[in-house]
Image (cartoon, rainbow, N blue to C red; front, top):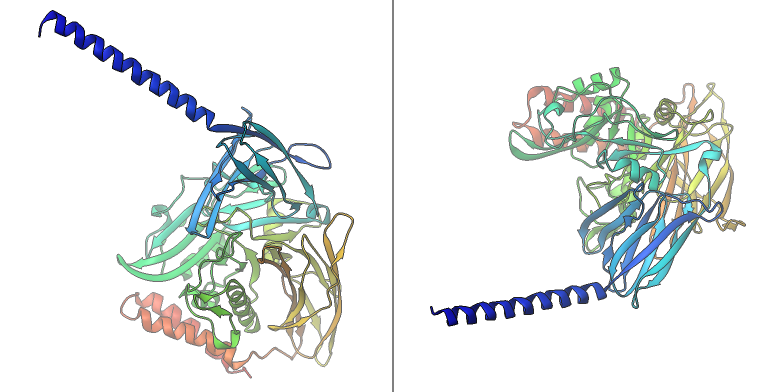
Length: 548
């Protein structure tokens, strides 16, 4: 190429380079012009102090966005989980510092929530013309700690790095993350295929009333000998050493767990093996609100073993409704109670693997002498508790809260006074006393207090001529058509010489569940595991001998 041609080529390249750079600059300017920054803070309306909270930012087209902490001392944890087009959970949990969010220009709804004890705060924000600032003011409608109730969740799949931020944002006092998690039969948790980084069996204090105990194990078995063969899930909570044995059989794990002061928790009642586990492992806890109960739309309409016909579970064309799933959960619990298995209620969300905030379903434990982790675990084990996804309740039978046993001599009739209160953010359409699985509706008044909450008194009586149990549950109707509930732990009535006789259809349900599994596992599970099913079957058949 001639020298003249070379100079022409160089000038041409330079010209087009300048054009490209100019285009990039203009594009950058255009992009910047299409964005605006939302600056915000979340405060307690009564004290004016900053609060940690959970934040939602939703555009008019339904798209959801995250925020970041605007302080070098702050933290923000993004949560994104979607199970279906209508089962979506996208939020940011924020420390008690200002936040910021760079967003496309437009209009947004911004909502702050904090656990169960604050009214939510929402406002519309217009970023069409540029940056905007917002202050979201949260207001308590109840302070359960002043009444010696402290919350926790026993089914957690959040990382240890995220938990301090998320717990404070949702004011959850106790979290028990399942840091050891195994999904294959016979594989020990030391080699768990879903384990978190190694942790020590040592309490982690975020502050004096928010704590994490990190050594907890989930056996959730989906495969046997490398082939798909679902058994189900069971948790060991608060143990002291890492388990070195896999399952099945499950008896050695139950023995080690209880030796170490751990509690065994039934995850979902309709896993295939669940009704074998209860008598064989001496299971302690039952998830009355479990990880299929979400803030967003109900999804698992056909999961697991089906309910018995006597449970009258509601369905639609797609399967179980949310109310149907809850009724199934309750009725299975009542069936076990009626057969003499005194499982204590608990709550879990599996936040981390499902579209649900940490502590959306939670268990409150009553601690008359103030909060400590050991006292909380002891109270959970004793059943001094209630579970909730929204409302609060405090219930006494005579002078005793949940978990107590009232003893009477042979020939005596137990005359009981059931009393207490419910409080809720929205009105309660129904409060029920539940006895041996049957429910009686109470009058509701929904008296609105000066703080804007709704209060109902509980005041009724009952008589027992034979042993049994009694509890209270309530339901809250939300403006969007969804519902929330609370359920107390049972109080037991023990009349000497008058044991409760369960109904045959209830015991037969448990028997058939175990028989079905024995048939399914023949030739698949080892003899030691099959023997556990036979033992469970014999226990239920013995109970059936006294059924009516």
